[in-house]
Length: 144
Image (cartoon, rainbow, N blue to C red; front, side, top):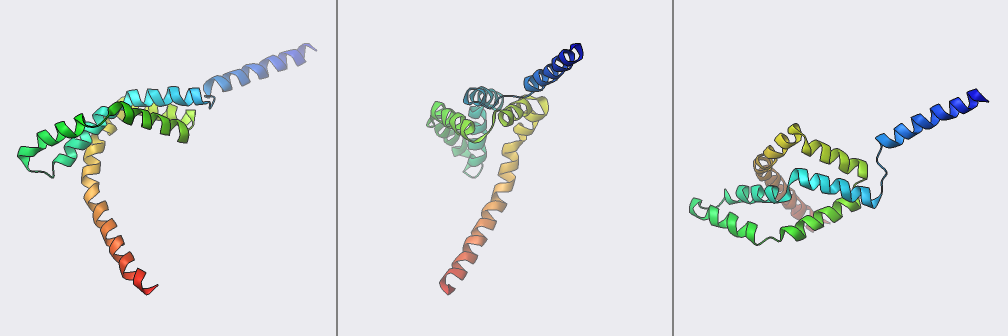
């Protein structure tokens, strides 16, 4: 009987530690982890960085004003709420925790600081390939 009780106690300790390591996937936990992610990734900074990269294609004397107007006309509260709601809808609590952990880390912050440069570098190639694909689709469409 003592062995049975001891075995049950050991099993319950392992189970408790496994549950403690995991994160229950509830809407509340999803929201909490999404909020952690947004705090770590700072949507306003991402948006401002994106606006600066978009402005590179404008005449130099118009860039600053463009960024200022672009950023000031966006309702960041509404955008952040939409991001939060969408993340809670599509990601599990564990996935959001992993994102928050990564983007809150020094490596994640470093990677994020380079992301707008990456997108600015990659975007022209993507746009060019999309235009080629659209042209090929137009060429095929009349034949069908």
